[in-house]
Image: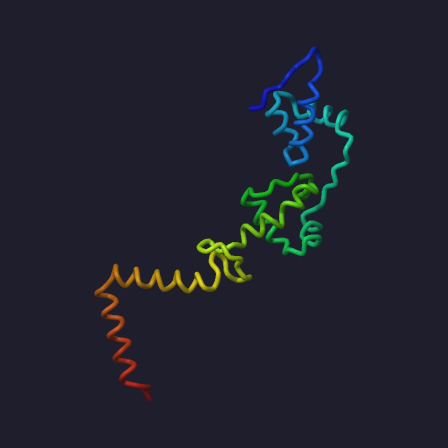
Length: 166
């Protein structure tokens, strides 16, 4: 919870700066009102009076086309709570958020095992680590189920020796 400084009937300049900064990060008026102990309408009035900078807001579709990413990547980041756009009928992103998205996506696209970038189609691991993880999983299963493994491998060997059936 943020400390709010009250003077007679006005709000301190430091509080106004904090309000403007938090709003530009994508916080809603209600969230700001709760943070500063004011109504969302009072927060809106303060921002209208003191915030002279015009924050450019871009739609989710415009951000995707500007950055060259598929729209579903931005939707995934939003649904997972990694980015917090403003909702005004549709999702809007500030310029600051748009600048941060490439680094966020680059971080998300790393292999969970080695940290190298993953190519499209590999969801958690790069191709090398995917093969390693599969082999590791198979060996663990073999260790946990030795009887079943022996049964499966002996059946496969018999089929291989018998050759093609006609």
